[in-house]
Image (cartoon, rainbow over all chains, first blue to last red):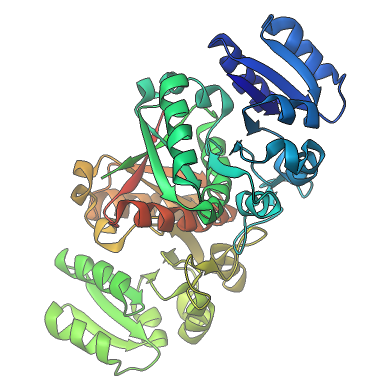
Length: 216
Length: 216
């Protein structure tokens, strides 16, 4: 499958590398077509990896992952272009974290709105599915790294078919055992706000290698 | 031990009843000394139960639980009186949930501040410990109701001794197996913001009988 990964940071790298390892054709998108971090990733990732602008990647992908920094996601996706994303699933992994005021970080949007909702409103012809933003990137694509994979990941979005497809991807490609459907895209508020809780937990445990299991 | 439970709702009831069942003397505090919900609780709870104003309860208790609705907690505690709370541990169970704008609820304070921090700033001579606000009240005092008690509760606060005492209470009195110390009172931001995530999870699972286990 042809897949766009928007963003060149550790999250984009982890997801793009996993997708290539599964045999997919991945174009990593950045502001500049020659982005050095994307170029370094392409060099190491083999013949199924390529790079381009956000628009190049969005046009290339049958689906797209938003792995850009949350505070810049709207601008990055506007650069990607609504037409290039129309009718496609956008898997939104981002968090609107603002570290400019020190620790703990704050969110640039929360409480009465969320980044997931902002993206869905800005791109009404795209099916935004919020997921994977509640944990560290190495575990996103290899849940077995924590407690043998006995923990949970969440999806939220307005399109049931898109959430079903993303759930298949999470289980079939990334190895998740349990995917909890939280509801529509407004549930992005909760999973994004919970990231501040996650930061506390990381501080207390001095490792990002953990995740929630919802016990019942 | 003489304990104040401030608040007459389901959370105050659950905690006050548990404390009385353990043999403690509990005074439930409300705005009015004759509050009907407190009177009904006293009637059912036996000779170790009493009621009074917020100030009566705070003066009575060697420690206090804040079980008031978060949006009214500052006013309730001001009525309780800084002198009556000075030098004591205040176990803050509240969440600043605002349901006036419909679902999902919003928080009246979050992101750059929290209710836990507001209370600690307003009552500098009181040792505020944030805990138990991340789960439903029946499970607060009986963790075995969910997965045999195999899940986690969190504490945050500026006074290590107070957190240690609260951890003893959580384990020894309420039956918690695992208490995670998140750090200082600023970690109230994360646990309070995570309540919006909890609301999503309750909606998805159609039950409040669940809790987080942090898998590593």
